[in-house]
Length: 145
Image 1 (cartoon, one colour):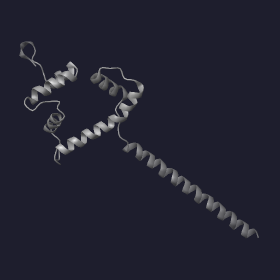
Image 2: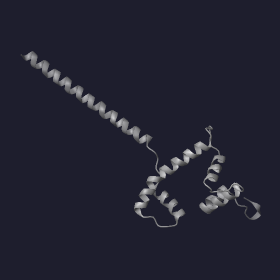
Image 3: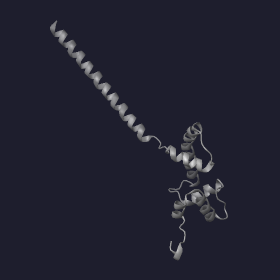
Image 4: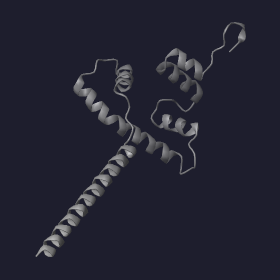
């Protein structure tokens, strides 16, 4: 009788240890999967930057409900933009500035006749003076740039 009881207790202890080990393995797998999900999540634009850019173009105040919808649509916009650039690149290994020129032509931001002048005007209109000055240097007194 004593031997049978000892064997049963040992078996129960082994089963409990196996269950604990399985639970620990499952928890570790869940933690690893959770970490992997964080790594693969898409980066988001900061809320303040999105609000600033959007309000610059529409020149109106933005309600909170509208801002929530804008934040949901921002990743979709950039995903569509990247798809358009990829299609324009014709499966090349790289993307050049010419692909952006053709995309801006397709979206009618710049005209076909005066690409560089239109692009320069477009950038100066959108960006602050300090940033547009970096992209297109301006001649200063003494003809120094």
